[in-house]
Length: 251
Ligand code: SAH
Image 1 (spheres, rainbow, N blue to C red):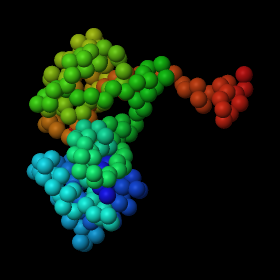
Image 2: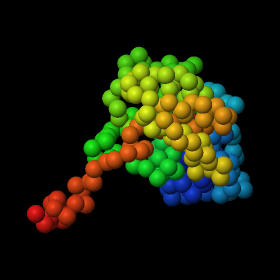
Image 3: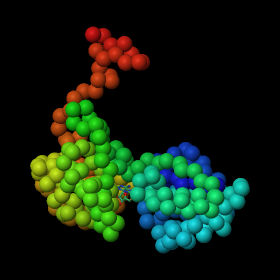
Image 4: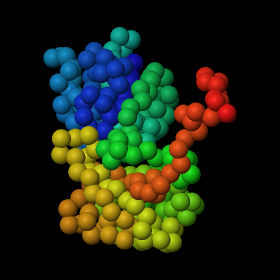
C-alpha cells in the first residue's frame, strides 16, 4: 500500500499520529527532500529504504512504487505540509490508478496554518473576513487568468500566498492594485515551525524592502489581510446572549 503523508511544515512533531506510525513501519520512504526535514526519517526502521524525490522525475518515483509495492509492504510518499496543496500528488494518484496499485492520503498541517500560528492570528475574524484565499503568483508554472493575484486581492479576503516570495515586488504590485490601499497588513513567515523560523511584519507599503533586506527568497508564506492587525468583532459562538445547539443563551 502506498501512503501519501503530510509531514507538516517543519517541526517533526507536527506530523499526524497516523503519519508517524506509518513512517515507523515503512519499508520504503520517498520524501520531498527540498522541504521535508530529514529529521523525520530518524523514526524509520533500520531496513527502511529512503529516496529523496528532489532529484527524481515522476517516472522514477513511479518505478520505485512499482518495484516495491506488495501486499504487506508500506510505502510512504512524504510530502511537506499537507499533500493536497501544491503537492503534485494528483498525477501520482492517476498513474497508480492506471497500474491498479492502491493508495491512501494522510493529511497534514499545512505551512499556511503553521504560519498563521507563528504570528498568533486567526484567518477568519467576524466582521473582517470569513474566507481564506490560498494561492500563488504565476512563475514557471502558470496560474489561470481568472485567478490573477490582483483580482483575488480585490475581494479583500484573508490571503496565504505560497511559492511566491522570490517575486515579492510583483506580488506586492498586484496586491496594491487589487486592494487599492498600501496600508494592508502583511506578514512574511520564513520556515514556519523550524528552529530558524523568521517572521517579518509590515504593510503592502514596506514589506518588499524588508523581505529583500532579510534576504528571504524561498521557503516562506506571505500572509495578507486585515486579520493581521486592527479591530474585529467578538464571535457570537461564545457570546452569553447567543443560543445554539449546545448552549442556551441568556437574552
Ligand atoms: N504542501 C505544502 C506546500 C508545498 S509548496 C503545504 O501544505 O505547506 C512549497 C511552498 O510552501 C513554499 O514555497 C512555501 O511558500 C511554502 N512552505 C512550505 N513549508 C513552509 C514553511 N515551513 N514555512 C513557510 N512556508 C512554507
